[in-house]
Image (cartoon, rainbow, N blue to C red; front, top):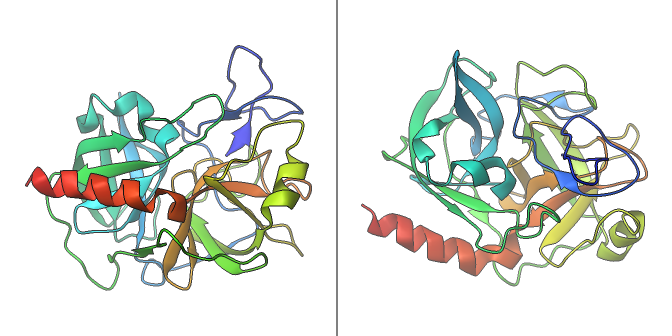
Length: 268
């Protein structure tokens, strides 16, 4: 969740004045100025891990929406679409690297119009190879309807296993922070010289102290009263008071999500 400085080379660890959003496809960051939270309070939170030489490493966040389906950011999984077996999801744990139950990813539906340059349409649906067992610590969240109204200033909760400060150390436990929805016009002005805030994006920020998602939280949930309204996508730095965090607006992709869920169900 940050922007790069490079014009050609995308650097995940750098943030500056210009250019393009970059993915958190390495083990990067956590919620800034949040609080430790138990998984039973946000049982829809999942961790997405990727295969590495030494085993499995944290990649991004994900959100449970059905017993086989999870949403995440397209930039987290774009390079794995043809090799879903290199990813797995872990649910039901408040720890970044231990506990919970692991499920192999069998299919990845990344949005067909996703742009790695602008991060427009930054959404993907993951299908697990087996049905997830629901419990107090593993449960789906409702997705915002196509006509869901999200007034400016609405309070929301963002959560994840990302870093606790920009380029800081990783949190070993699940964190959550309360943020408020920022108007589209205010967010667009903030990013005027950096990027375009499209209709498929929604912005949010927390203040006193500044609160935000950060690197490694990408793909995780932004939730209002148990309704998923956003997916952590990108932003300039982390908890930067001048730049709200930018999320994929779930209501904008409700039909797409339903279509992919039907495809997933058809796979058995």
